[in-house]
Image (tube, rainbow over all chains, first blue to last red; front, side, top):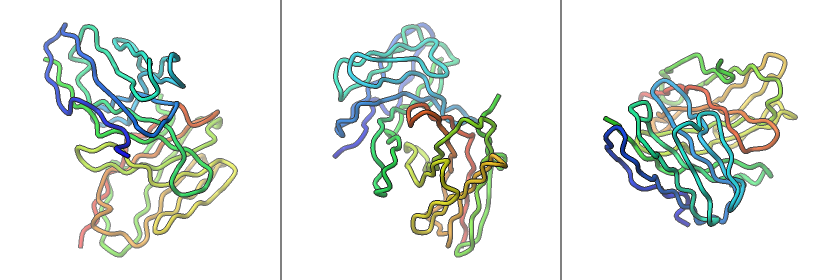
Amino acid sequence: NAGVTQTPKFQVLKTGQSMTLQCAQDMNHEYMSWYRQDPGMGLRLIHYSVGAGITDQGEVPNGYNVSRSTTEDFPLRLLSAAPSQTSVYFCASRGWTRTGDNQETQYFGPGTRLLVL
Amino acid sequence: DQQVKQNSPSLSVQEGRISILNCDYTNSMFDYFLWYKKYPAEGPTFLISISSIKDKNEDGRFTVFLNKSAKHLSLHIVPSQPGDSAVYFCAASFGGYNKLIFGAGTRLAVHP
């Protein structure tokens, strides 16, 4: 299994440009989410999805759109990028832990580093 | 207002000794706590978790302790190894595993 994959690894945008951050997972997980990480702060939830066709907002949803047409893919769209969206973006999917204790966790992708000028 | 706090931005420990990373929370509704490790340019990797019905969970060199009355949890790494050098994030959730609230992280450096 590749786990959670994200593309691109790094992107530079100008203010006002749009782009889509791609996320895919091959673990057949129903739940997927997007977080952003800023310096000196923990990860903050942007949007999440509990299954195909179902999405909801997290803690910091403004400026971002999501859709979930398949179980595998959960793209994050920036319609009009702003410098405040400069951050590292992580996609995650939720599944059982590998420690066999009947608990779940979120498995994260490697991240997309976004710079908005 | 931060619901999950890691008050120590960094920690330096000698190889072979114990590393203790601390985390405090304010929301008494949290019922599940996790620790993640993060290397530079990689995503966070799950380490260990504990539900609010327990006060201790162990996995190899890693042990998490939960003190609900103090709203405090800690991660113990024994013995510490240079490969443990990373940023450690504490996270919490309630009502399931969906929405994780993260602390700001503690950078652990394990030196020979």
